[in-house]
Image 1 (cartoon, one colour):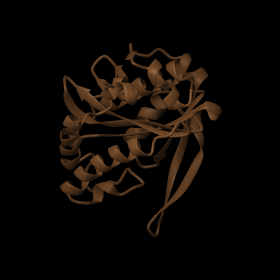
Image 2 (cartoon, helix red, strand yellow):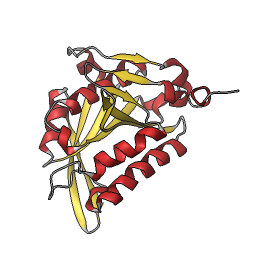
Image 3 (cartoon, helix red, strand yellow):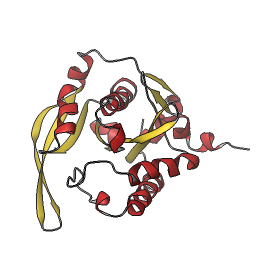
Length: 215
């Protein structure tokens, strides 16, 4: 009888940084991650995400986490995928970080997004988790560039990106209702990534996943 990991090898992919473990959430993890989101992922009065999913009630935020997780898995194809990994420290859920791409086998470009529970901000977890994702992208999947779009007033995310060597790559303008939102488009090249020192990151279960990434 086949195991779940045999059918969907992503369940065996694990990224470990000095303090964190990044892995695909199991059903048993989802309620904990939903609770983290329900308690808040940014200060009141801020909206660092283009999709205003944090405007609703705690229950709305919790349901969004579950719906986004299932949507990402159900819509996955080798030509268009989103790897959303739970961030855990000593088994405690802290948030979610994601690596996504379209036509990766050709363009070799990834994009990242993330959220962490507000109680876990300011402790370096966001930077550490991003380094874990980028290690997977550049060192294992062969990415040439990584991109992120950040609102100009999202100073925390701007700081993380620039600290990791991202450089300005123009702006993007998106509509949220009747409001036009401007983001800085930032780009990290493989050469810049390789030229920098990084904390030790270990990965397991990558090889069986390569066909799912279009590789």
